[in-house]
Each structure stands twice: as structure tokens, then as C-alpha cells.
Image (cartoon, rainbow, N blue to C red):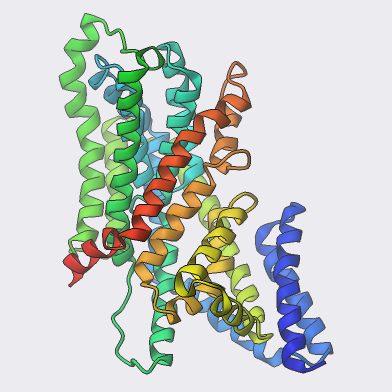
Length: 463
């Protein structure tokens, strides 16, 4: 068998072998790296790969560890964890709920708004869904909300962390797309390409994120008008009403100002994502200190949780680096390129296939596993076909967000199931998510038909 063809077959088998190993429950990072090294040894034995090429793994590791942009990841995680552990998130939800309490559906609207704020601070779906489930689901059920509507709003709002800046997912995708775009443009003869930055991706994701939040709120208003019994107004005491204005200034405004300052400094070009993340981390500590929650115990827990989450993400990235390197050396990239270019529909057909693949992988893999596994393989081909890199990053994020919300395998549904009371059945959570999946699909169609919704703001800000 021809060596090139043999390498491509091994690359394809390796891809499905990695997915199979992950489905068996083995640790992701070690599954990626271990399976790749086994296939590299097999390919070397069959003459389809030279093991000396693996010497480039070490410099890639060092490049990851020395990448200043990625320093923003643990800082943003720390910021979100501090806001959660200090009780600021809980007070934020309570205050927002009372602010909209006299309206039918008001508590649902407050859950969407607070979910967006928490998403902007944590950027991690699991943390947001669990937090919102613990804080808001009992309150919504006690207020008489339809359990399907309550669970649907919580899971949908929790997934906003995928798309609303400063999402950690967008940071990694922005860094990856920056390097991939430079390589693609140079291969096309453009030796001075327009750079793609994390700030571009943040700006590109801003309008779609606001669209998703807006369409969720419109749906809640629709339910309040057509089915008022599904989302009744809160009954507040006179004392709660009298304290409302004070709580708005002391509880609602400070974290809102912090998040706007962090995101605004990035979009305004005043600071880099890393610099803004450091301001956000310090700002979260200051807010916790004002709430008298900046204790040694809380700080230790936040630092431990941040280190744990950051280590998990980066070890997956390192394992995925080995996978993508071996996949390329065996000729897998040429195989993928030939396949995507042969699909009917040209560029659109290739995009639809990659999005469908990522959507299905979202049932069994986490966000970071998917983007580290699939994006390095498919993004170079898509960019070579003329796909706009910022648009690609945003559509991938929204697509994965939809996958994590889709029954019966959506991760967001499992997260909520873990903290929901026994009185709320799993089928209730599934039924509650379905309308929001359709809302997500509407937004995806709009982003495909009108790509300017993604590209306009980055071009305006960064010219």
C-alpha cells in the first residue's frame, strides 16, 4: 500500500479511536496524547511516519506555557469563582428578582440577566448552570413557575457563558485562529495578513450574545402574556420594597460596573485581555472585601478551584497538541481537505458538515476537548476556502452552546439534573430545554444569513 494512503488511513482510524477511548471514560488529556503516541509508533513501524518529527512537541509545549494571551484564562476563572464563593452572585439574583418582581415573568427575566452577568464573569457553562440551579430554581418553583419553563430558562441562561465575552472558550479559540489564519494567509502568498486577536473574537461575539439574551427575554415575555399562570409575579413585603433601592446600589451596580469595565477596556482597545483579566480578578477581591467575604478560607477555596480548573484545561490542550501534530504528520490534514472540498455546496457544505460534527461531539465531549480536537484539523481548510476567521469562531461557540442544551445528551441538562430537587423529573428538564434549542437555531440561521452581525463590530472597533 502506498505510504501516503496508509498514513491517511491511520490518521482517520486514530481520530475515531480517540473518540472511542474518550467514550470509555478515560481521562481526556492522557487519552489524546496516549492514543496519538501509540498510532505514531504503529505508523513508524509501517514506514508512514518518522518519529524524529515528534521533537517539535517540546517547543510547542513551551509556546503554550509562555503565551501571554492565555494568562487571561486563570485570571478570568478566578474572577468568576470569587464572585460566586463570596455570595455576590446570590445577592445579585435576589436583588434582580425583586427589581422585576411585580411583573409576571419578572423572576425569569432576572434569571436571564443574572445568568448573562455570571456567564460574562465565569465563562464556564457548568459553573453557571449549577450556580443558577442552586440559587434560582427553588425560588422559581416556590413562586409558582411552571417547572418546564423554570428549568429551560436556567439551562439556556447558563449556556450563555459559551458566547458572552470574556468567555474562556473564546480566548482559546481566538489564540488558535490567530495562528491558523497567519499560516493560511502566508500559504496563499499574503505575507502581511490582517491579524486576528482575542479582542476581535470578543467583539464579534458581543452582538450574537446580546441577541441570544434578547430572544430568551422575548420568549419569557411571550409566556407571561399568553400563559400568565406559568410565570406569576412575586409577592413582596413592604420591607423588601423599601430596601430595594439601597440593594440596587450596593449589590447590583458594583459587579455590573466591574464586568462593564473589564469587557469595555478590551473592546475599547484600552487594555489587552490579560490586563483586563487582572483588573477583573482584583476587582472581584475588592467586592468580596466590601461584602466582608474575603476570608482566608474563601480565598484558599477560590485559588484551589481556579488552579484545578485551569490545570484541567491546559492539560487537555497539551494532549490535543500531540494529537494534532501526529494527525498532520500522517497526512490526515490532506485527507480532511480533500473530503471537505469534495462536499456538495462548496464552502457552505463544508461549514455545515464541520458544524454537524461538532454538534454531535458535543453530546459526548466537553467544549475544550472539541475545539482542541476538531478546530486545528478543520479550521485551516475552512479558512483556505475563504471563511472569515472571527465569524467561524463565533459560529462554533454558538453551535456548541446549542449542542450542550439539546436533549437528551446536553451537558447543561445533566448539570441542572445534578442540583435539581427530586420533584423535578429529568423529562421535565428535557421538555423545558426544547423551546430554547429552537431559539438557538433561529440565531444560528441569522448569523449564517447575515454574517455582518458578527463581523461588523470588530471592523468598527479595530478598523
